[in-house]
Amino acid sequence: MSNEHEFFMQEAMAEAEIALSLNEVPVGAVVVINNEIVGRGHNQTITHCDPSLHAEVVAIRDAAKHVKNYRLLDASLYVTLEPCCMCAGLLVHSRIKTLVFGAYDYKAGAIGSIMNLAQHEKLNHKIDVIGGVLETQCSENLSAFFKERRALKKAMKAKHNIANGL
Image (cartoon, rainbow, N blue to C red; front, side):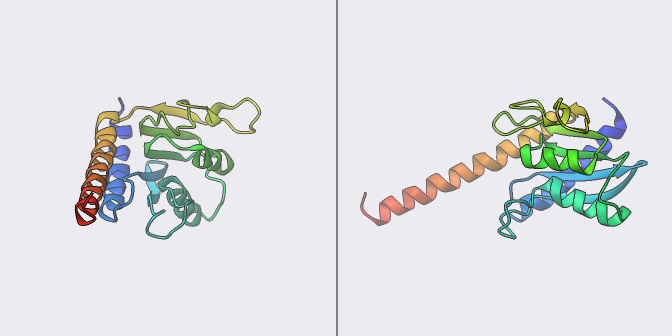
């Protein structure tokens, strides 16, 4: 595993921590061109009531503004979770060269887990993909978040049942 990939994945993980502090699903992303971070993002769907504000979208928008171009040629995107179909489509349209992700998403991952838009034969752009960088740490952060969320939901249900004599 490249130290460079681990370094930038840790930067994406720092963005995921920001999402966690906002009670968002802890996913973070950074866009890198020539070993420089040109875009950062973390999930903001709940905060802004906008289902499109995934970490990848926020980071790519930030990078596009930074380089003043909607095409991010020669850019690498580092993200803590395998992108969904919306984000995978954005990667193709923005011409991201390389995607590096941490955890695989076996329920919604569109870069190989349930489909592969990064290499789809009918699309006009193919993305180089490196999956599983710091996978354990990325997976554990997401698992801990959802475990805590389930426990909170269970406690609230129990409190509701007690209050209603159930």
